[in-house]
Image 1: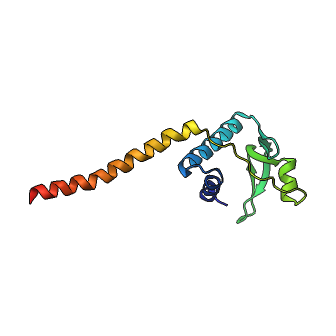
Image 2: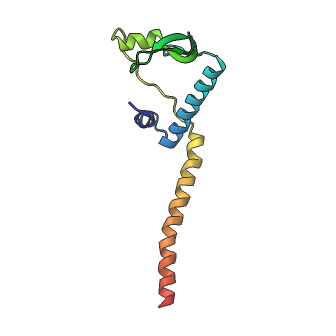
Image 3: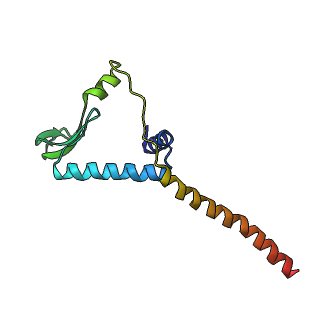
Length: 137
């Protein structure tokens, strides 16, 4: 599953627009990346832990010439899966059904009004154009 497929899947599961899911996913990735760059761990209970590890300096070989080369030490991101994720992947547990909180009714009303206004404006534009054409003739 790539990023676009993930966004589509989450949008369908939550009923949110893809643009909102894309912004949320970008914010999540940005937050995890920022925490890792500072050296913090990000733990999502049941899913896993993102952390930064140190890779020691080592000697490698150039595959073409077989000459030894020094590879510098580096900080690398790492992910350690949580117990719940491991159990689901290994078939020892079933994935629970997705339960989402319903959006508040108050928030839905203004959105419905906003959606109705552009539709009314679009319907009025063809009528105005037809009236202008009638005057020119």
